[in-house]
Length: 272
Image (cartoon, rainbow, N blue to C red; front, side, top):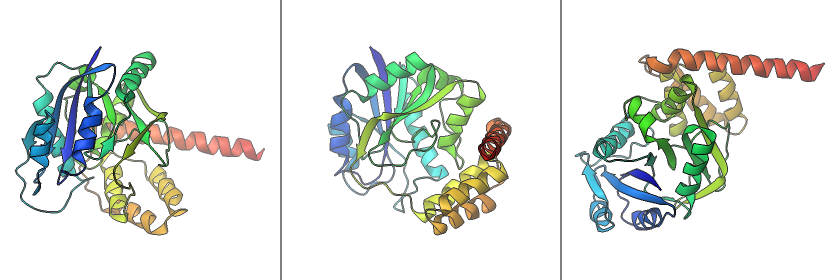
C-alpha cells in the first residue's frame, strides 16, 4: 500500500477545511502517512480545526494581509509544509487546496496509474473546468512521486510559475507528467481565474522562459474568450522579472518552439 504525505496550504479556512480533511483521511487503498496544514496567517480557527483532524500545523508567521495565491509567497508556504514532510517516509507527495474535495478512491487510482504509465507528476481535474493539454497538471490535487521529488530538491522554486516549473522539470528529464481527465474532483467554492491571476501567469511564463511566439499565441487563445484577461497575461509576461528558472528555461523555449513548428506544419497540411 502506497504511503502518501500531504501538504495543505490554508488561510482562514475553518469552514471548508473539515470536509476537505475528512474526505482526505477516508481515502481508500493508500496510507496517509502525514498531513501538514500550513497556516498562512489565519485569523480564524484554521489551526485548531486542522489539529482536531490529526494534522500537523506549521505556521508561516505572516501578519494579517491579503491572500497571495499564485505568487512566489505561495511557493514559500508550500515549501514550509514540504520541510515538515521531508523526514517522513512516503512514496507520493500530494499538494491539496484547503477547499479541495477528493473522491474516496482518488489517491489509490491516480498512484496506480502513475506506476503503470511511468508518470512522476499527475492530477485529476475539477468538475466543470476547462482542461488544456495533457501536461497541464493542476496545482491542487497534484500527486508527485516522492523519490523523484527529493532528487530535484523536494521544494518549489520561490519564483513566479513555480507550479509549472515542476512539470517542465520532469519533462526536461524525459519523465512523464499527465492530467487524468476522468478523475474528477470538486471544490467548495467556485474556481474562476481573475484578471489578476492571468497577470501572475504571465509573470510565470516569463520566469520559465516561455518562447515569445508561444506566449503571444497563448494570449490570442485567451483573448478569444476574454480580451481583458489576455491583456493582463501579456502585461504580466512583459513586466515579469528577468530572474528565470534557469534549470528549465532553455528546455521550455526549445520545447515550445517544437510545438509551434508542429502546429504550423499541421495547419499547412490541412490546407493542401
